[in-house]
Structure formats: structure tokens, C-alpha cells
Image (tube, rainbow, N blue to C red; front, side, top):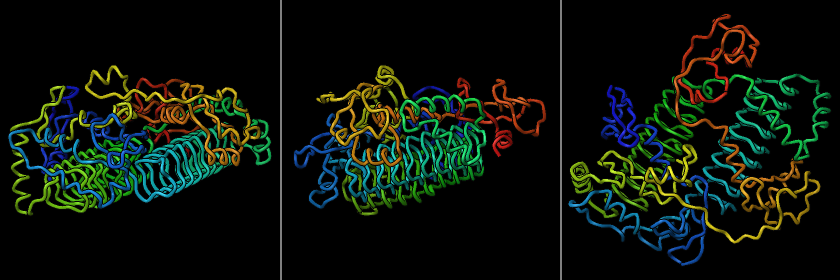
Length: 583
């Protein structure tokens, strides 16, 4: 075990013996940044949910792109970028041993054209990015295998749903966070296998529940009290849920009710030997977040569908293994180090970006089905490995120094100053929000919102209170958000959905709705805490336990690591105490 000081934040972090074994297997040196700073650095290269209008550098026409016009790189429309009409090998260059590697790589970044978006297998889903296998979707990001959805982020295998985040396998759901395999679930969080649920939290296998928390396999409950079927639907009629005023009233009431119940120290199920949060169906995975079906991973984030044997791996997965310091790489990738946007089926890549179905690349950009290339120049197999070895030695002898004075030798991910995005448009900001002043102080770029010439035609305060009063002409209105004051519109598929579900029109724009949803997500940071079960009730006296616990009337002695910060008011129980209360 070794304790090191992070060269970015200067906080000490520990490298365990099993970490050294992983680094030896991957043939990389131990990190010099702490796990959190490494994650922020990777996510700074991830445009979270923004599309920009910019010029296509091939045709000169305006296109929608995930890369802003202000970025110092060339962008081709995706269809043209995928074609054979240009050759990224034309930008290849000899390696200059008198200059740092990263300096030469940045020049390659600025000369090789980039794709406008990162999507594949899309049908009528032109305004989506970081997505695949989508049909009839609008403004959806970090997504795959979805149909007839809009304004959703980090979601999969979902149909006919709007404004949901970090969810899998849902249908006819609305304005919810972290719901899985749910049907007709509205304004809810952390629910699984639920049907016809409103304003609820932490429900599993429930149907026809309203304003509930911590229930399992229950039906016809309102604020955790049982009703007959007839009484339940009579109460819902009284609640007048078609009215926006009523929805806002009961949402506020439900969220206040949620705070009076205990939370399990982590969100997840069907795991073995894991730490972090939002972990499902995984084993031997530590300090990781939002992962499903992972094995032997550490310091990782948002991995789906069989990611294995990887450290510091952010976004994607899908049967990929031996990944280190990679972001937005996946779909059967193997043995990638320090890569961004390299997929599918890539093998043995280092320091590469936007490469497809390639192997044995070092410092390449935009290559497709290539092998044994360095800085986009072709070599024989023997020459490739000989030159690669020399470059790694030279990277340690002549390191790159970023503008904050950080040293970049072989083993570091790309410097954040290489990112084409402002911090406020990236996954870094999404998970670790800071002010513009702080971002600039820390050396990040910041992109102020583009000034758009929209003429507001309707204030959201003037929207009808019920959907039955909304006419088709609403689709022509440019509406002023009640929260941020910016413009938004109602789209046709959204209006159809709201009418079908008898839900009122939203008075906040999609960005404000998204920000409200992700407030329910814990940060990817662990704190050492103790169980807050004090025997007969919670430590703060708010929640009276409904069952006896192993520790009796005394305080629970269990300790754990949790992403619930000690400063938060949430009641946090260990797994044993929590299960006694919900099962």
C-alpha cells in the first residue's frame, strides 16, 4: 500500500496492493491524480447533453453538432465523416522526439476532422447525441435502444416516455429519476417493477401507489396507508391530478413525506462485494457509480452490460474489458488505455480518439479499421512496437506541462485544456458542479450560453392548468420558462403523450426539469458514516421503526461508506436495519 499526494488537488490518496497488480497487468505506472480528479478529468471530455449549430467544415453548411463552433477543431457532418470521401491518414505525421507527445497530439486534434455527433443506428432521431439504436426520439442523450421518447438522459430500452433520467426498461413514464422496468410511473424516484405509481420513492413490485416510500409488493396505498381499490381511485379523483396546481401541491407534499423515512446506505441490488452507489448485478466492484452487470472494476462510472477488469472507466461498457482511463469507449472494446470515443471492437489502443474498429494504435484520431499506426501514420508491426517503446520512454524524459503546471508523462489521461468543451457543458459539471469563477480558477474553459434571437410569444404562467384546455396551436408558441426565463417549445409527440396521460403542460423548460431531477442523485463521492438507527427510532427521532432489529433497543453499531454526505438531512440506515423496515 502506498499513500500519494494528488498533483491536482494535493489531497492524499491510497494505492492498494490490488491496484498495483492491476497497473502491472496493464503495463502502466501508478496514477498521480486522485480517483476523483481523474474522474473529473475524463468527464471534461464528455459533452453531457448539448447540441450546437455550427459550420460543417466539409460543406460549409450549418449542422447540429455536439462540438461547438468555438472549439479549435474541424468538424464534418457525421454522414460525410463516416464516408470514404476523405482519409484521416492524410493527416499523419512523423514523431518528433524533440517535443512532448501531448504537444504533437494536440496539433493532430486540430488538424483531423471530427464527427459532428456520436451516434449509430438512428431512425428519425436527428436531435440526439451520444446514442444508438434510437427511433423517433428527440433531445435524448447518453442512450440506446429507445423509442418515442424525448428529453431523457442516461436511459435504455424505454418506450413512450418523457423527462426521465438514469433509468432502464420503462414505458409510459414521466418526469422520474432512477426507475427501472416501470409502467405508467410519474414524478417518482428509485422505483423498480412498478405500475401506475405517482409521487413515490424506493418502491419495488408495487402498483397503484401514490405518495409512498419504502414499500414492497403493495397495491392501493396512499402515503403508505392501505386503501381498498374503490377507495383508492375515489381519492385519486379527489386529488384532481389533471390540474397542474394539484400536481405541484402533491409533489411537494410527497417529497416532504419521503424525508421522514430511512434510506439504505447505497442504491443497488443483486451485488457481491461492491462499494459506491447505484450498483446492480455486479461483483468485485469498488468506488464505482451507476454500473450494471460489472465485474472487477474500480473508480468507474456509468457502465452497462458486462464491463470487466477495468479501472477509471467512464461511460458505456457493453462487453468491454481491460479498460483504463477511458471515457465513452465500449461495445466489445479490449485493452484500451487513455482513450476517448473509440468503439466498437477496438483492441490495444493508447492515447487515441474517435477511432473505430481498430487495433494497435498510439496517438491516433479518426481512424477506421486500421492497425499499427502512430499519429495517424502507418507502420509495419515490428516498427510500430519499436517506435511505441521509444515514445513511452521519451514521454517520461520530456513530459508535457499543462497551463497549471501539472506534469504529464506516460500514464496520464489527456490534459483538460485539450477538451473542446466548456466545463459547464460536460459530465464534470453534471457530477461536480462549480461556478464559472471557480472553473476558470482551476484552469477549465467555460462556455457562456449563446445569445439566441427568440421572440417569446407566451409566458408559461399563462399556460392552461389542465391539458384538456390546451389547443393544437400551443405547438406554435415560444414559451418563457418560469424558472430560467429562457425559451422552450412543446413538440407534437409531447402534446400527444400529455393528452394520453392527462397531464398538464410543463411550465419549466427541459433543462430546468433535468436539473430538478438530478438533484436526487448522490454525488460519486464516499463518506465514512455510521448507521442512524437508534433502536426504536431513527437517530433524529423523525422515523419510528416498525420492526425489531438485531441490535435491540440500542444504537446500531454498523459502519459503512456511503454517498450520502453527513451534511445532508437524509436518514441513512445500514442494509440490515433498512431491510427490517421495508420487507
